[in-house]
Length: 241
Image (cartoon, rainbow, N blue to C red; front, side):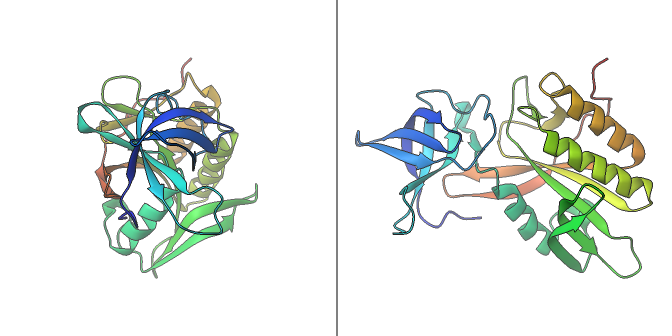
């Protein structure tokens, strides 16, 4: 995905009310930008961080800037748009760029399923093959070495999705959890059980039941963000005793 207009560099003053961020542009003017991320954004919202904004001239939008990237040390970037991974995966599926999910001729986004009235991100179909139920999660937490971790806060909704996928796998269907790492300084993936022990237990139960877990990285620059190749997932149990 190429950004529709060049991004504008800025410094973060503060992020507040989840969806708002006060920023200082390079010319010294202060603006308020939309923050498309309801999560904790641990490690990505420090005051004074160098960030990148997308400007717009849409008269229907109250805020004229949207926060898109955080600049990290050593030339790395993190994307903060929590809705972007689904769009990246949609494009990658259409282009056959996710090897683990290749070979399906039909892709249906946002389909209702399961006993808890959930919505699966993608339902993949192909004659002669079981349907594949694919749930996508955005990941941009890094605390140690080159590990990407999920989640960055408690997510009951995420645990519910794991339970639904577990049921699909137990019934003989194909259930896939796909994590998209929106930062360029990570080369492998694991959970953060200290931040959400319940999610870690649900994850272990899901994987034991046959839910497939895959992870892909991203290539990020002020020009755009695209899905990149698969990253290894820690095979060991994730929940702590």
